[in-house]
Structure formats: C-alpha cells, structure tokens
Figure 1 (spheres, rainbow, N blue to C red):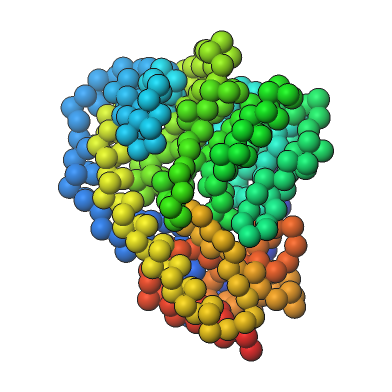
Figure 2 (cartoon, one colour):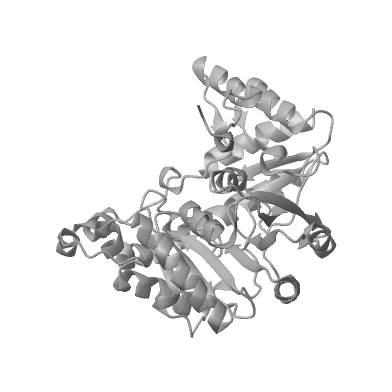
Length: 389
C-alpha cells in the first residue's frame, strides 16, 4: 500500500526509549541538546514581532511565485548589508516556507529519480529524509579533522559519477562548526566546473562566527551554478516564523534558466502565506536584537566548556569556528549511543551521540552551546564526571 520511499524504521531507538523512561520516572533531565532558541531564555521583542503579522496588506491575495517583491528585497538587503554582496538582485531569490522546502525545490530542479548528490560527512541527518522523498541518492564525501575540519577533495573526486548532479556544503557545518574556507571554495568551484555540477550551500548558521576571520557567503558565488539556502529560523532565532529562501547565482545563462524552472516549481505550490511575507522585512530586522544574545550565550558556554575540560584529561573539544554546537572527542570504551544512554540513566543528562550526525567512528558527543548557562554548567560537570570515572 505504501511507497518504498517512506519505508523508514519508525520504531523508537534505544536512546529515545531511555530518555522517555527517565522522564517518565519524574527525573529532571539536563538537556545539552537544546536547538530551539525560543525556549533558551532569550529576550524577544514580542510587540514588534507580533505587530509585524498584522499588516492590512495580508488581506489582499497577490500570488507571486517567487514571493512578494518587498520580502525578497529585504532578503537581498540582508546580503548586501551583512555580507557585502553588492550585486544581488531580488529577482535571484525565491521564498520558501523552510530550508527543507528549498532543498526539495533544488533537488527536483537538478535531479531525475536515482540521480546523486554529494553530501558532507559528518553533517545534519535531515538530508537523508529529504533525499528519500525526492527519489535522490546521497553519496557522502568526507570532512577530515587536522587542527580543524577540511573538505576531503580526493573523496569528492572518488565519489563523483555520471549521475552526480551537485555538491552540498553546509557553511558552517552542523555540528562541526567549520566554514568552507576561501581556498576550499575555489577548489570546489573548479571541481564543479570540471564535472558540470551545481553547488547547494546551506548557510543557516552563517552569522554565528566565533573566530575573527573573514566570511564569504555563497550567495555571491558566480563561478558555478549555486543555490544558497537560509531563513529566519537561525538568522533571527525565529523557527516558528516560516520564512526561508533560495538565492540563485552563477553564470548568467545557467542562473537565468535555473530561476525560470524554479519559478514554475514554486508556482505549483505557492506555499508562502501573505502575513509572513509582509512581515519578512520586520522579522529579518530582529536579527540585530537576537544574534548578539545568541553569540554571547554561545561564547559563554564555550568558555565554560573549556574551563571544565582544562581540569581533566579524558576528553577534548574539537575546534569550532561558528554555529551553535561543540563536538567532544571522548574515550572509545563503548558505542556513542551506549555512552549517551548511560548519561541519561546515570546522570540525567541528555547529549547527542556522534552517530546521529554520521561521524565515521565512535568517540564523539555533540553539545548545544545555546543551552541556558546554569543548565550547561551542571550538565557538563555531570558528563565529565562520568567520562573521568
């Protein structure tokens, strides 16, 4: 009765069962995996946010397949103001309800059923489900760690086939926090030109840089056909306000044809609702209030993590350049899943095992750096007590 593409294992895994059992017994579980900024103790300008949703213009139905011009102009302004992309025009932007929908548009644009996309490993596990729903095959390429994370270009070359249609980069990566460096961007463009591939760049954490180095958005990448995805979820800390976008750039003729085809895809769904589109400019402006709070929280927790790590020798954190997460390298005495289960059962602390993010081996835990500070201090103390026992 059901399609093969939805034939997922839906039974709870051992980790989820252990967590539910702990909470069912009334235990207070310290959550070091917090990803929802609206529940992380930040201050939101409620009046301004809610007021942005009350535009009388929302009462008029004005279907525009790329999204309302006013909203797209606001997005283009963000790239010009915050990232120096001077030549970006609103006509290069298509609005979507989420980056997931943006991915689905781009996957449909580039791939026939069974075609392939190269995706980083480790990375966020959402890609597998998106690819299944679009009948696309994901082929991993490695990120390697040596005093920082780098793209493994030999693995890219090895994995490319006649069915490869594009390369996905997450900039900065979730959870490694590593940006695609300028030299890597040049090499990636060269690789994609040679193989006739597009770049799909996920930049939802772009603004959360932790090191004083220059950043470069893929939104201004004109060397090869490039699709840059982002949205309000991380930029303004508003995941419930469903506004995201795809920016198309690259050689003029290719980009123009891509936009024409994307416009038909978007017109088929017309998924963006009017109140959110009219509110986009105001909500995007909220980034100036939220980003400083989030960056302060991330830096505070990262400093606390380093303070606690300095007092022990069992584990270390890997370099993180940006984003909201930190990766711990831990002794491999059992699987990461088993360790995470023990931390829930014995210490009432929730962390993510590395295999959730497709790390190549055991020995990794992933922590959220937007966890409320008191909870982070207490939770990390319990984690390190367990690891050093």
